[in-house]
Length: 282
Length: 297
Image (cartoon, rainbow over all chains, first blue to last red):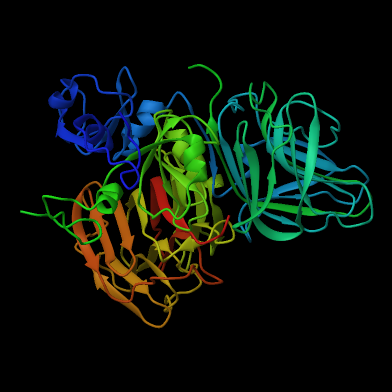
């Protein structure tokens, strides 16, 4: 039996047509179906037998999962696995804070939060989601950031999943992050950094990180990490992907800045989003 | 009988063109095969039959609107797999149990903003001094609310007194110092009442050139004062206000339709300003906003 493309493989047999199309029926009718092949889609048009009108279900091989049609049903069905940092309006009170000499505040002009490192060498601040949820690196992760960086000279900046805080260098734990690690007086681009737990590597995105930009990082385990700036793909990294395990018991998500000279840097985080899968069993 | 298809065409038996049937049905393919596809029509849905190249077995996929990637339509693995593919598409702001720190805050003339630890939520209070005013807001620097896409606000709130006051709840409004809202792109509900009698919420919107208002049948001051509202905006269609599940107002003129809130305006505002020596409180008990995001990620 082939479920191939009709244009190249005409599969008009009953089995093939069945798997290429939706079943529509009452909840009790869906409940009474002879178990189909995994992947069959059924749409409920009358609430009964635990099925809800208007919800789209998919047979997973042993039971029906809500996959579309009603966001509450979808979330209810997968709440054990959802891990979603949703901060369209970031506030410092929602983050664990570690500050040495820097000034951390809510930005009530542009919205979001900001770190001002001030002018002492190695002043720094780290904001983290810490020791509660854990991102699974065996599953896809996407994070977004609208970030304004005042200068990349002698700056340590990081933003990502499993990311170590400021003033920590050479940590090889599994991580994925945007990073500027620059201890020179020459401007440095934004890099994408990842670690497989043994080796950390960084790739130049070819894009400056200064000024306000919208960044998107899409991690697909065993495939790649794609980095977008302002909607344009700027880098695809395939080396040293974490691929397994999780973000661990420390920082699950970190955004941090550190000045590595006596010039103050201002970093504004105006939009923070990260979605992945919870690694802990609930 | 034949029914219109998504393309406006009809099945005409007894022989169905393969290309038409193909578009109307799911195609199963391996992750590797999906990754190798080209020239895919938007709307064609594929089911991944074996994990590979970033595709997950059992999930259904469609090309994204800009045709530079895939989005997950159905995910057996859970809702989070849909989220990871479409995170950049829109905004979901949630303050089910609002705390004032979740918002930008402005007060003047003695107005205050406090957390309500008795009944929950945030109280925007003008206090009892003429021109006392207070506002919670979401700055437009965080995301660019997209007027070209639908926005829905779900808010449970209590407004204790609609006499001689200015109050606004919506998107694209300017702050309380703009006593007469201009034609900047916005939509929402407003009370602008110089009389000593209670009045109704008005739906207001501006398209950048003209602002118009439509009175609704929703009077904020009632036996309980606390109501549950849905403010639903659909570009090029209209704005609808629901109160406790009933449609109480519709507006179809001067919709913003494109762009984002202008400088000086906010993605979201809830504000009150009193015009006499009597306090007005806007008690926001719960708030959810969904909208498009015009920022490119």
